[in-house]
Amino acid sequence: MDAIGNRLQFVPKKSLWILTAAIFLSLFGHLILFFGIPFFSFGSAPPITEDLIMKTDLRVEPPKKIQMTTAPKKKASPKQTNAVSADPLADQGKGEQGALGNQSGQAFRLPESGTYYFDAYVDGQLIQAAQLDWITEGNNYRLYINIPYAIVGPFVFESRGTVDAYGIAPSIYWTQRGTKPPRYSRFDRDQSGGGKMYFSEKPEFTPDLLPGTQDRFSLLFQLASLLNGSDKIDEAGSIRSIPVVDYDTLEMWQFKSYGEQESEDIPSMGKGVNRHYALMQRESSKFKRQVDIWLARDLDWLPGRMRSIESNGRTLELVFKQRAPIDKSKLVN
Image (tube, rainbow, N blue to C red; front, top):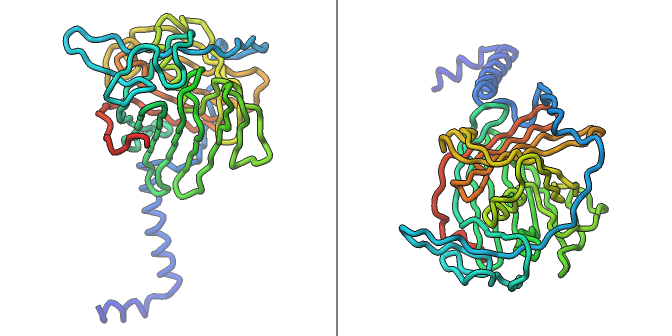
C-alpha cells in the first residue's frame, strides 16, 4: 500500500483529476444507458387525437350519490368480501355501509384489499416492479404506491380517506420524489361532501371543494367501485366528469370511455375484458397531460395499466404484473 501511495504522489494533480472525471463520466454514462435520466426528457408529447380535444365546454352533471352493494356470492366457493362498514374479512350485508345507511344512488362496491405489483416504465425503459397497496377497513381506506428509481430514490404516492355519500373521499394526498420534500394536498370536507382544499405548494390557494373530488390515484378506485356496482355505466363514447386534485391544482377532468373491449392491452393477463378511459383536453389548454387507464374486469375493475405523458414528453407507465393478499399489519388503524 505504501508503494502505491508513493507512486500516486508522483502523479500530476491535473492527470489525477482527469482520471477521476473519466471514471465518473463512465459510471454516469452506464447509469443513463440502463435507467435513463430522472425527471428530464428530451422529447415532446405526441399529438392528442382529435376525438379527445374539447372545442367547447362540456355540460357537467351534478355529482350523484352512491349506494353501497356487496359482491355476488360465488357458487363454487362462497367468499365474503369487504364492505366499507365492515372488517376487511367480514361482510355486514347489502346497503349497510358506515354512515351511508341505505341511501339510494349509483351502485358502488369497493375492490377487496390487496397488494398489486406493476412493471414500471419511464420513457419506455423498464425500471423495477412498483408496489400498490389498496387497503380498506371499516369506513377508511389507504392507497399507497411506491415506484423505485435508481440514484434519486423512489416515487411515492399516498392517498388516505373515507367513503362518503358520493364515493371515495380522500382527506390527504401526498407525493414525494426521491429525497425531495413531500408535497401534500389536504381535503377539508364538510358533512355535505363540499368544503375547502389546502395545498402545501400554494398556501394562499384555497379553492372550494366539490362533492366527489378525487386525487390522481383515488379516481382509479372510484371508477373501479362504480363499475363493480354496475358494469352498464360509461358505454363507449360517453364522457364522465370528475373533479381531480393534484399537488397544487383542482380541475374538472373529463374522461372519455371507449367502452368494454376484449383485448390484450394488459399483456400479463392475456386476452381479457378491459375498459379504456382517456383524459380529454381543452383546445385552448397550454399544458396537455395525456392520461390513459385500462381497468380489468378480472381484477374487479382495478387498473391493469396506467399511462401518463407529460407535456415535455416524459412518459410514466405502470403495467399489472401480479397481485397478493394484503399484509394484515398494513391495515388502516
